[in-house]
Image 1 (cartoon, rainbow, N blue to C red):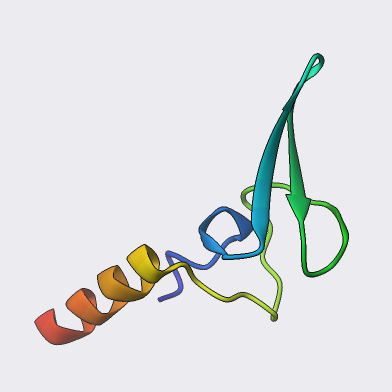
Image 2 (image 1 turned 90 degrees about the vertical axis):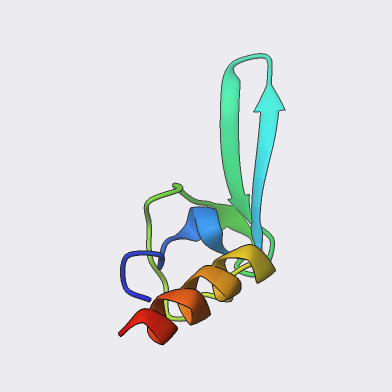
Length: 59
């Protein structure tokens, strides 16, 4: 799970394309973030949850 834990894999992560480039926003926290940041409120997307479960099964 640790290798998946970052803002970019969270359900609250919202990339927004602007004239100046990409901006990344956390809809839960309400402010700009970075894809590699980590917070305790992390809620993985369904795809990431499936990958985590698949890896657990290999162990």
